[in-house]
Image 1 (spheres, one colour):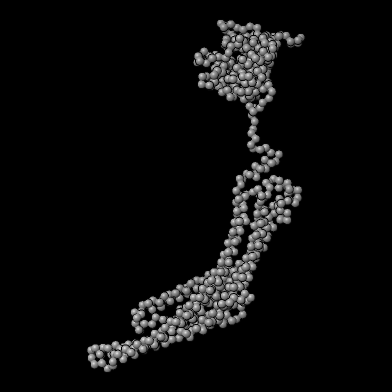
Image 2: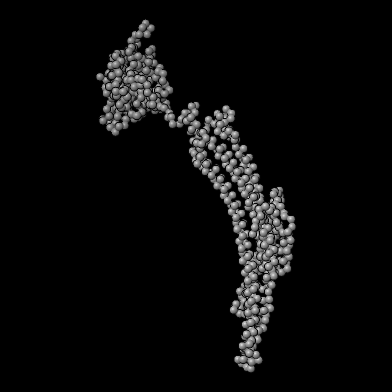
Length: 600
């Protein structure tokens, strides 16, 4: 079978295969007429393939195709039932060894049925040609669509003409916001998309040419050759004209005569010799079998030729569909290789904030997240832990007015150089003292005795120039021990004039290390209240601004947790914790808790 690729005629346009009905299977004239009609149409002018239709025509064509498919299914089912019935009739006959049995369909029209079958194959090939032609047209359209999509890739830092370098200064500035090309950033996306669409356009163009120039012409040649083969098959109809029925009838008569001669010879006077009747019967059976075998050979030749022809047809269709499947596979693989893999290994696999993190790390206008926030304990400066920067004692005292005999309550802080009076004990909000007395201009004059009703001590301020005259400041506390603590500390500080000696005494008194840091908790820190128990880790710096308010009742500005005007000790317990004890309740404390070192 030759395939002339230069021929472009589509051959015969097949209609719905109604010629496969039961009349054709029975060899009726309707089947022959249907095939004749097909042959006549095949020699007419070729019908061109419609390249495009409007949507309404397409939908109507699909509906008509569905109805035709339903009709074809019904017709095929009827044909199948007819053939199955004939096979059951032949199988249900008597023993094939009987001379009256004919195994061949003596009244069949196999050439018409086979011609109808290959006419159906022509219709199938026609449908495949139409589909592949439309596929080639779609591939041409895909070329245009992918070119449009490639030009639609218009990122602010990317252009088709100049891929790597932006055109305008604004685009250059935008490009600086993102990671460079090839690092898996968003800048890789335009290159991936344009490359994908360019490859898809090239592949679609190759697919269209392959279908149009190779696959479709071979199918058209096959369809034209089938038309010739159908005519050749129809010309073999004379090979199936036979006299098998006549020979079977004569065999039946001779077989009856043979049986009668045998019966007469066995049970009565024979009219004819069974020997002679048997010779005649065998001769007739040979003529019958010769006619049957001739018909059988015709069936074998026709079926073998039809089998080889259909094999070629199916192989050609398989080859066309293999090319089509290979085109689809290449397109799918290209999508995977050019888009999915690159995106999956690049931008899609990155952390959603990787662009942001890199932007923050590169831009000097922002701070890296790894830079920690600093606190006061992270700061160091000169004289940070100088002994002269510590407080030695703090608490609430009552001071007598200069002109009146009434007392006013205030919170006092004793430092190495001053005695400060504050309104409250909150060093966060109340940082400016109401009054400050320089210890270099003061001395302690006297204090009350233990059996006195009031516990007072007098701080004498020396005369400083002509304007500032000397004055005696009277302070009152609620216990003798508290009074003596204030008195002794002030006396010691006012008696030491050398700053070096004063710093040495403070270091010993507050138990500071060589660097000036406290070795244990101290009451004389700004970051603790008079009622708070804290660990030493919170008291490492004299400049810690954290302050805790004491507990007050709802009626007066009085510290209800202390029986004395607010002075207390903080002592270390054996387990390492610290306990703050008001001086008024010191006797009730555990004997194992020792007070601070007394002033010498």
